[in-house]
Length: 563
Image (cartoon, rainbow, N blue to C red; front, side, top):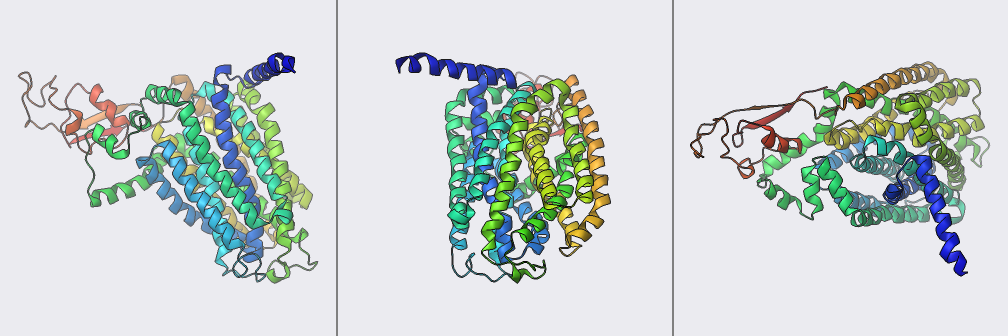
């Protein structure tokens, strides 16, 4: 027993540590921090896959499966509202607080939905299937918003703390750990018949609250590393917030006063559109938008075909018609949830295998550009095969493979493309791409699906050519942006931060310092406290130190060149 504790266990731990470090090319001293990133994402993904496996059965047995395309379409509107709120919160809250706020909101929301689903009048015990049953819509929109927002927030947070070389190895390990959570969430969904859907929502709420706890522990454990990293990247505002200052103290530190009510409202609306403006200012980010969102059109069509077939196969009625929703009985909700749980298990097992054994190897040996080509090639082949052999098991296998590739290969490779971008792009533009852009693409796919009125045969006829064209276009676009990425890394260029020029108006009225008046070269009569409300982002702070000619209070303006 003493030998086991003193030699065998430490030796085994050290061997595993060395193997993981060598396999993913992550320095051993960084493994604890990378593992913690993985634990945070695992909690997010576990909750998502559990709830995501339940949202379609709930919609099917309250509203009707034929309304799923409309649910995806209208989720764009609801998610847009969520993105606007998130976009504003990123400008007033530090990252840690943002995690706590969003986790608390969604955790409490899932608890409320659990109570409503168990209600005999409006919950799942009500066997009447009607498009006016708002609970089915609310569950669908809430789960869609959670999956979009929390994952986008996690990757924005992670991107801000890792450079390119570190990310090449760490992202594969993070995804591998996260897939364990995804498998756990999907496995729970397969027990919907035994546990119950309402009870599973409570478990999902607990997982969401766990995210907030893990983030808090992460900041306490790696506080010094986070502060050093942010300071090295000249993120003045984020580094200050880590010292425990609230927003009012931070504004005071840079000499700003509280905005008036009208100015505050104006800043909210300007913040909402800042992320969108950043996307259209840079061609590189527009291409990133394309490879991040266009595939969702094809995946939405394939996913809808698969779920319609699944709903029919798990129905207790042998003569189910998609437009005769009342023939799908309420007891079928759990069997459909079980099927989607199995689907989630297969998807995440595939994703785990690829991320653990494949991502780091592929990226290091073939580079980011070639890694980006894998998914669009498989997507193109899948569209061809599903049209030639439209069977449930074919869709089950290919859609699970595609989703596994998205989570384990495509998404981590896509995240690497954000490395040579500014902090504003990483947070604000990325939020719009991952949340709103993705939802808009899904809405397009859902709109295409709605044309057919639930007839999957007609849907295949209508969507075959558009899906093939989109898949091929993504393949070409992936090669182009991969080439751009290599050029940016080679030239050490950061999109959104390069070639900063300053324009300003000189005011001759001001205190005389050392015989110099305002506007004279070398005049240093102004300090940060005089520039009220001028500095709207972190980059502006560096302009004071870089400028050889003084800026005038309330009249300085900064303008970045666009690439």
